[in-house]
Amino acid sequence: MTSLSSLQATISKITTIPTLPTVITRISKLLQNPQTSAEEIGKVITTDQALTTKVLKLVNSAFYGFPGKIGTITHAIVILGFSTVANIVLTASILDVFRRKSNEGAAFDMEKFWLHSIATGAAAQAIAKFIGSSQKEECFIAGLIHDIGKIILCQYQPAAFDQVLQDAQQKQILFYESEKAQFDVTHQEIGGMLAEHWNLPAALTAAIKYHHIPSTSRDFFSVTAIVHCADIFVRAMDVGNGGDEKIPCMAEVAWNNLGLENVPLPTLIEKINDEIERSTVFLQMIN
Image 1 (cartoon, rainbow, N blue to C red):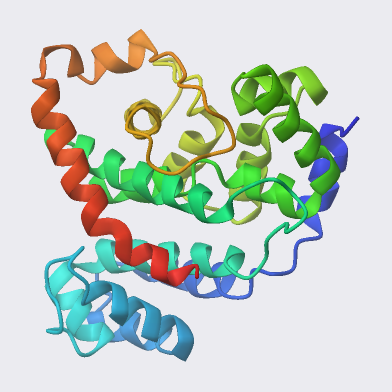
Image 2 (tube, one colour):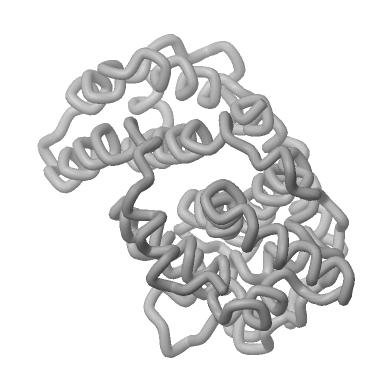
């Protein structure tokens, strides 16, 4: 049985995060200073040429609506804003961490996993826009990485991962339920540990840790609730696959508190579909 302490030890030994703790930390500090200029943030990002290339590719994609028009990081910051570019850097960094590694021995389709993850991010952003939330970018990243604990389990505890995957598929239960039954640790806790290890923003960490069990008693409920709903919408729409074939029950507290009980569902689903189509550019970053 894989224990929580064993998983904590595994995460503490992860060394494949060269960009995340340096560039993100420096940008975060700069963003706290209202006097910080676009040039200053641009200089930090451009210290990593590979990251700069990825960021420019993303900002010039249809996802952000400026195809081929932005030539420098400074220009991107002026057009899109500090926060948006910082979130793009975080997205690019996280995708880069995991894109090279996979567990070839597992009966797990990594491409479908990432499609599900990217679609969940897109759906979360669509929902955030639809209800008028100011946290649409945070919702996209939170949706993108909500299942990141599964990647940790797959890459660093492959035997435990295979055991959970087989149990979920054979019994036709949720991956989350299989984890609880097998060793009482879920990808929520595992992903939460990694988020804390990386010092990710609290709203992202909360969404990772509680996306299956949103509660108004927790901080950052709105982002977590949106990711919870987005995950279920994407499962129902059969976009990608996170390791099981089940659709979880929608938490009434999330649905009602976001005001979704009164929205026209066909319109919302159309918005989610449009956002998912625009987000396919992110798949190119992990292939």
